[in-house]
Amino acid sequence: MRVAIFDFDGTLYSKETFQLMMDHLKNHPEHSARYRQFFRAILPPYIGSKLKIYPEKKMRERSVQAYLAALETFSQHDLEEYFGEIAAKMHDDMNQSVVERLKQHVANDDYVMLVSGAFTPLLHAVTKQMPIKTIIGTEIPYKNDMLDHKSPISHVQGPLKTEKIKQALEGQQIDWANSYAYGDSHSDLPVLELVGHPVCVHPEPRLRTVAEKRKWEII
Image (cartoon, rainbow, N blue to C red; front, side):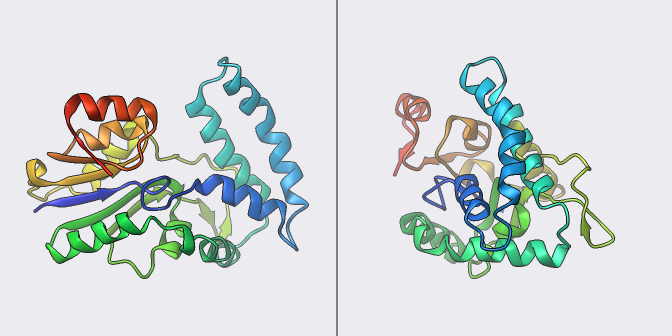
């Protein structure tokens, strides 16, 4: 079985999900007051990461946890509705050339996967019209159908992406040499290196350097 693995931010989606999520909360007609709580929580790690005294990976983890904490009274239904609002704003900014690649992989009977650090219900909402077999994202903990914002989350990024991919494909015979992966950032390298056909989508400078050196496809 061949697989085609797609990153989301900067790849399938041309912009940054978390920036849109912050803007949505900040300008929300009902929940905008929650943005202040979120902003106070992320400011110290954000400044620390910019000053290179706090790891960016941990800053990202703190940010997604703080975002959920700001939504602490939400039920599962509330969250799915909320992420549906965000998803509706994203459709016009999907990377159409990558969407066409995804459809071609489906036509070629490849097993299509989406792997991202974005929250899973948001990924499902924004891609519900796309023929994606498996979606791997950052799962949201619930307790009695309510958001359990105090439980630690496992933010899917870096090497954890490859771990989750291999878990999802466990027991399958994968033709890695003829499989594809799409990404835009240096942090996508572990996934791109899994396959025989890595594709870099508008890559950031560090990834472009690697791609050009290894003669990977760039679109």
